[in-house]
Every structure is written in structure tokens, then in C-alpha cells.
Length: 449
Image (cartoon, rainbow, N blue to C red; front, side):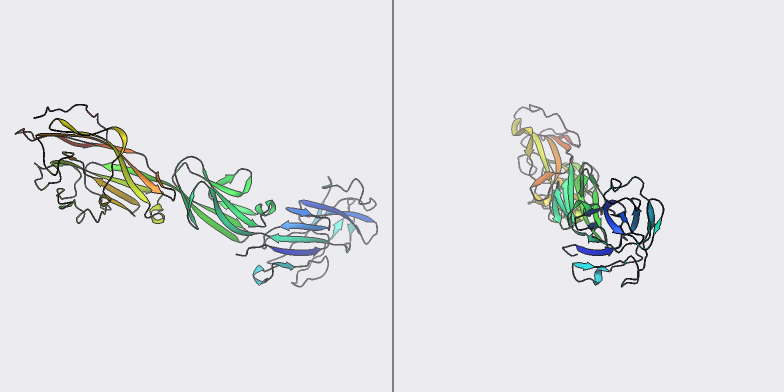
């Protein structure tokens, strides 16, 4: 793609395409002063009788001859107005095929001449006839001429203005919220006339700005915005990012959940810091009484959080900037005495990186957690009694270059355990997981022993 425009000059015998108008005098074969109009769509006129047109190289320019005044009325009369109320298009001419091949032009400025009579160098012929407002044909037309300068704009770039972060030359992303992503096309020349040839697909128009396009950030989606001008198109993919988060407290581990430093062949590890998590791939509460191999805690709840990254395909674009996090409220007692106490939400519950799968697999990332009871004593140690009351607030973040941003709704879950190892028949009195929050008590169920 070249960085400048091409200019084509046409010396034309009273020709044009309707819209911009110039009035001047010529001598017809019958004598007298004729006031005629030459008009070109989307054009401007300068004092040298040069009409400047912005168009594409493959867009034919159609000459149009218009009548303005009878031959006995001088060009300076009041009837020579733009446009006259009674002007008539008598005959139109155009060029057939590609009359200029831009690939064969080495310079940025070149000329092409279209004569009112005869044949030009490319074998294009044409005769312009025009008539006065009385209906009289005037033939042949005068030899006076007007210069039509044609500018072929070049689409140079499509760039991000605001509302997102550029990921690479063809992708930008932002977390779902209100407002818009704004893109802007750069043309050479960067004029309003050139922008009138700009066409768009994807997104929506920016009111009052032909050079810009916008994409709503209100819905998670990938929108390809394409700017086209003449024979050039440039596209940008706009990703509005979100994650659909769910927390499973039952069933089995997802087959796409690969935590290579944690799981053993897709199962809970038998040696995690020296402790056994009970094996298998089941989710939900377990306890040492029912699963004797469990040595990580006397009771434990196994959960799996899964985030499906939206829109589809974003996990192939952003591969290593995701995280799964949670805050918590927790109160626990051991032997009737409070051992942990976080009374307000917002306390960050740091997860071991081993228990996360943050490289997207089939568009999803994962995190597991295993709260246990006792909350503070090692492995299956219980000092007579133990109680754990946990509320968790799970969410997903993504770092698009300016730090982690939350990109999901918050999903809640809870774990409750009550153990009395002195009770000969009911040691595990409660051991539950839920996706609902619990009411956290202010006092222990058990007095110290």
C-alpha cells in the first residue's frame, strides 16, 4: 500500500458529472456567448477552471453536458446561476473498462486526456453535443476546455482510538462494560471528500465522523470492523471480554481440567505436601472416617471452579493473562476456642498456583479448592472438637496490559464442618458444600474441654 495519493488530470471539452458546478463562456460554431456548466460529483472548483474530484480508479467518471442560457444572453447575466432551475441533461458519456491501470504507473502524478472529438491514446472515442435552453443543438462544441483533477485516495491504516487495548496489529480487547471502542481510518488525503468514499462493515457509525467506527462494549462478542476505500480494505477484530464462571460442589472433575503440578493422572493427589487428598476424581465433601486414605484434613470439601472465556476464540488470542481468584469470610473454632476469624468479605484467599489451570483448554480455565477441618491444626489432628464456617466469593481476572481486571460475575460457595472426635457414634456431625452462602455463627457449639 502506497503512502500517498495519485492525481489524474483530464483535459476535457465541456464535460463532468453532476453535483459541483462551474459557469464560464465559450464561443459556439454559431457565435455568441454561451454560458455552460461542467459538473463533477463530489468535486470542488478553483480559480483556474480546475475541478478537483476524489474518486476510485475503477469508478467511471461520466461527462454530462448541461444547458444554462439562450445564446443571446451573456454569461454574466442573472440566468447564469448554480444550478439553474431549468437545466437539462442532454447527453452523457463515460469511459468503458479500466481506462487507467494504476499498477502500471510508477509515479504518483500522471495525466490522461479525453478530447471532445477524435480518439485518445487508449482508443476511447466520444463526441459531446449540447443544446441551449431553446432546444437548439450546438455542433461542434467550442474548443475551450476545463481541467478535471482526479485524486484517488489511499486507505493507510485502521487504528484504535480509545476504549480498548491493542493486543497485536489486528486485535484489540477490553472487558465488558458500558461505553464504546472507537476505531479510526486514516486516508491520504485525509479529507472529507476522501472519507465519502470510505465504507464500513461491522460496528456502527460514529455520529458526525466519517473516519470513525465504534463497537459497543455492553455485550461480550468479537466484532470484525472493516474499513474499505477504493481497492483497499483493512480489518480489526474487537474482542469484548468476559468469563462465564460456575462452581461445582459435586460430580466429578472436568475432563479439560489439567493441573499438571497438582493432579495425578486426572485424580486428586496422593501426595500433596506429604498429605493424601483422598484420590479419585470426585467433587464434594469427604472425611477420614469414610476415606481412610485422606490425611490432608479430618474432613474436606472438594470444589472445582470453571470459567468459559467469552467470546469464543479469545483463549487463543489471550493465552496467559487469566487468573481465578476468591475472597472469603471464615470463622473456625478448635476445642471451643476461636482459631481463625475474618469477619468481613474482601479478605483475599490466596490459592496455590498448583491448583489452577490458567492456560485455556477448549476455551476454559479452572481452579480447585479443598477447605478442611480443622482449619489450623495439621492433617487429621482434631483437639476434641473443631468447627469451620467458610463463605467464598470466586471471580476471574484478565490482565490486558494495565493490571488485573475482574471479568466475570462473582460466584459464591460455602463450606461447613463440625467434628467431635470424642463422640463415639457421630464424630462428623456436619460436612457440607454449597453454592449458597451460610450464616456464620458468633459462638462455638462446644465449650472448651
